Length: 311
Ligand SMILES: Nc1nc2c(ncn2[C@@H]2O[C@H](COP(=O)(O)OP(=O)(O)OP(=O)(O)O)[C@@H](O)[C@H]2O)c(=O)[nH]1
Ligand SMILES: [Mg+2]
Image (cartoon, rainbow, N blue to C red; front, side, top):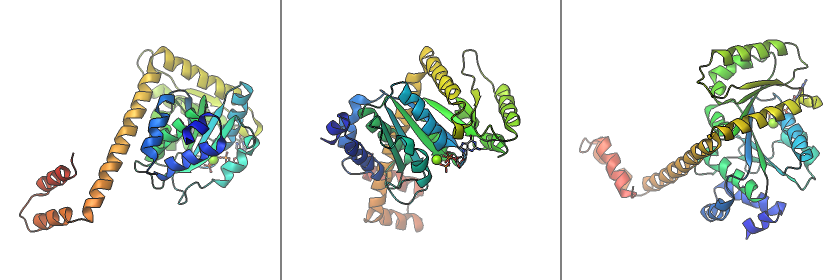
């Protein structure tokens, strides 16, 4: 019923569904089954970068441009560290407020607490909710600070990595493995000193990267999101990458990769939960006692444990 209401564009149904996803509700398998037919209908664009680089400001401006083009837009702001569910990141709310009353835009902050497979399982489900609600573009904002966030960003069809001048970001990007996931580099805050240097650093790094013929070469664009400048260039770079994906059959491949990561995350989460429930039972303590006294080796014990949970 909720999915049907979301299909009709009821924003409260969409919000409820995302809350179910976020909290890892028991109903989730049913919800996922109801949403399955709508998978793959939206273009998913990830935005990542250091805290404060301008992701939300850029997202807000991109939403404006997409709405002007007649798109229905979903925005997911992923907060990997938020201790409270449904927690709105205040800054995000404020900076994306321009679209708060637009029925063609869904904006949602999300944390991963409680979800079995963590962010990598929760995010694609939330994307599917927005697809079900008729969004044809979904923007996913994640703070690029750790591997998990990098993984989430890489689940998009197109990933934008935002940098700002003078933050040592170019070097950081290499360290965090962000370089490999970027389809488009956005040097935001180009009103600041050092933007030319940052652009040059990034272009230098791209030039060093090994690329086979026909492979995508990351684009570099500049923006001053706070003034709405350069947004058209970002949108053009996204379109160009999208066209490349389609020409090279990469859209399907990326989405299959995304689905594989999702299945794996859910399966591992389920497994972990089952093993956790054994810990409170008698099987695991019994095996542990045997291993501790040398009656059994830990590999054999692990195999017994897996056999007991039916794998
Ligand atoms: N000078 C300048 N400031 C900008 C620009 N774009 C954004 N800002 C400012 O930078 C600050 C952070 O912007 P946000 O869009 O919230 O950055 P964010 O990356 O979403 O931040 P987190 O979500 O906290 O990681 C705000 O005060 C913006 O007004 C820009 O192009 N130039
Ligand atoms: Mg933000």
